Image (cartoon, rainbow, N blue to C red; front, side, top):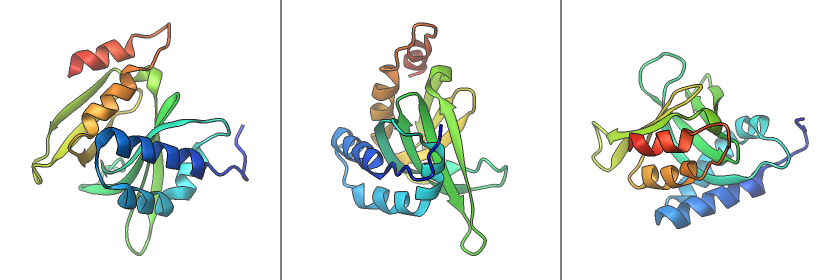
Amino acid sequence: MRSTTYDPAGTVLDGIAAYEQAAGGSRAADTRARYRRLADDVRSAMHPGDTCELAFAAELDRPDGERGTAPAFVAVLDDRVLVAWRRGRLRHRSGTVVVSRASILAVRVRAGAVEPKEILLTIAGDKDVVLVAGAGTHSVLHDVLSRTATPTTTAPDRARQAW
């Protein structure tokens, strides 16, 4: 059940703090700014009672079939991974991609082609998501996703094998 008055800001800020502590980076200001721009999209996909284990800014390989990337905000929730994105300066187009954590089969990493400090991170699940993220993100994300414990799936084991 979704609430129109529910505001997940506190939960998301906890996820941002957890990511910054785990990754040892100083991108908290960028991540908070990205969250403010995409807060409505994040809010529409979250439910009361959700917990956010990690939250970080990334670039999303365009899910609308067009070339390039779009600024994105990634929130790893207790049962799903939420990616909110927006593109365009004049005619904003935004959306969300939600991947169930139980459906994640693999998390693949490869070096970025443009910036050596960036990586391409592919989450393969019921929907595939390709992110361009900062170095260190893949190990933090892998640690969190490998803690997913559902008795009916072995997704964490398959994700661990993909590394």
